[in-house]
Length: 287
Image (cartoon, rainbow, N blue to C red; front, side, top):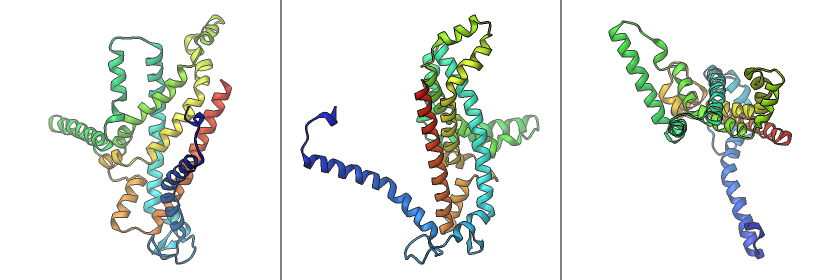
């Protein structure tokens, strides 16, 4: 309705300036970070000392590039492992949740749905601390009474995966459930009439229909896991993901190698976001 209202040129110019300033506010910090990834200086700030790619490919300190920095490359590997694990677990449970809340009626369904959404409103730090306290208390109790030391319940990758899984699954559930809500149940009924079992109908009819949502939810889960910091910081052990490694590096003193890592993350995230939009648009056209 707003674009259809009569306006004068002054209002249009002010509105256009506001939009331009808004996107400038969003993009300018990212542009600055990207530019200083190529600054031939030991500090990610002015003055500009010339163009270099040493912060990506450098082999010797102090200009050790990100691709040759063992701490950062190990962090990338750990983050990839955690992101893949969280994505797979989240998709499996989110798909199950979507079918549960969209296809079945049961007692306390509304209350269970509120519990499903609860991780979205809990701060990541609180969620991480809660999981850490719970797991540590259980592990300590078992060790004190039985003598078993359950290592995976201590701070480490397993708790990091569980902590991220706790809230990322909720987001994936909402994405998949929104797609499942559009599904025509008569397609499954037709498959059943043709002799297919309920499981065969779901795997051959329903899941292909959900493919765009599954791919989109998977990309969202991967990005959120890879770039998560608050929850991960509370649960991490000796194997630090990339975000924690970057945080530790910043506390020691930043160099443009952090800018280089940030630029790589921005490019990768942008490509995955475009892939998600493309998959979603194809799914909408297919409908």
